[in-house]
Image (cartoon, rainbow, N blue to C red; front, side, top):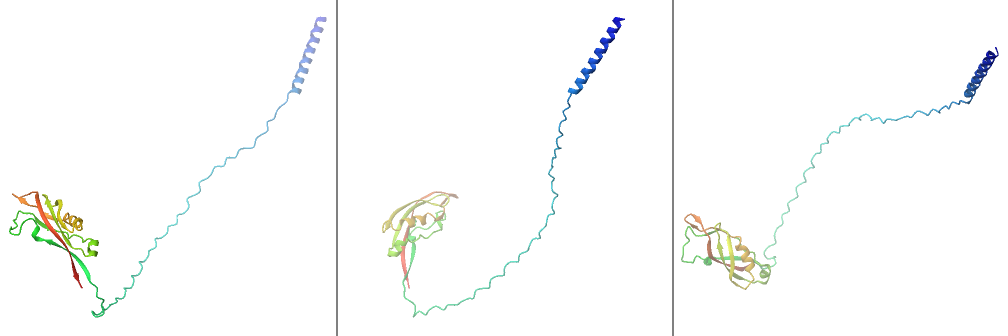
Length: 202
């Protein structure tokens, strides 16, 4: 009997201890409530609707009116009695036909070179102002296509005044090349004299 009472007493003590322990656990347990963050608002940019395109009409521009014609003014020249007498000198260049290298007593055969284009030399300005006249003798060759090549000054008077103008003009001359058996050939030792003269006209 004593043993039973001891067992019941022990059981009561254990039960009471368990209840006390559970009460202590419940009283010491704290609950942390997390603060709720506000919702994050994400704004999405929207593409605006296409605007209406205004179509502009092409403006037609009228051409400007034509200008009025200028009046024609007729000027009557002065009479010869009132004109001021001025001597105007016109330079000229004479091709010496007797110095083409063919000779005066020789006839030009069909197969000989013949000039088809000539350029008049430009009269030097200094020589024209000073009234200088003269001539230039030149020797040259004619190639198979009628071009003047290998130009040399053989003589001139006055010296070196008209040489450059004569050489420059002769270089532009064109010939129908000499023909042998129907074939164009190179022709050497041709000569020509260019005379530079000033003609006076009132």
